[in-house]
Length: 102
Image (cartoon, rainbow, N blue to C red; front, side):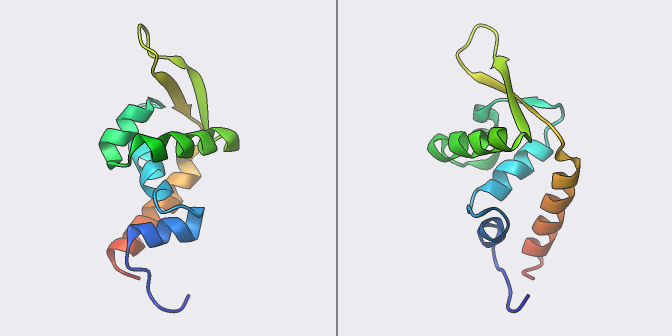
């Protein structure tokens, strides 16, 4: 690769075609459990809901995330991550390179 990628957004665009996907995936990778809600991702990343919801929907389409229902007593969708081990390694490496401005 020639030149440098100076930001997480550039790495995200290069890897996923979206400047926020790396942050969303990174937040999902860092979860303590496998289940999460989009509001948790929004709080973790600062990405607006209008962006976070479609990105999680894309992850559902890939099978990396599945919608498993709703938070009891709420209308908030509940998701579970699937197969994030390899993706977690990729995200960790991209974040290291981004921090090093490679």
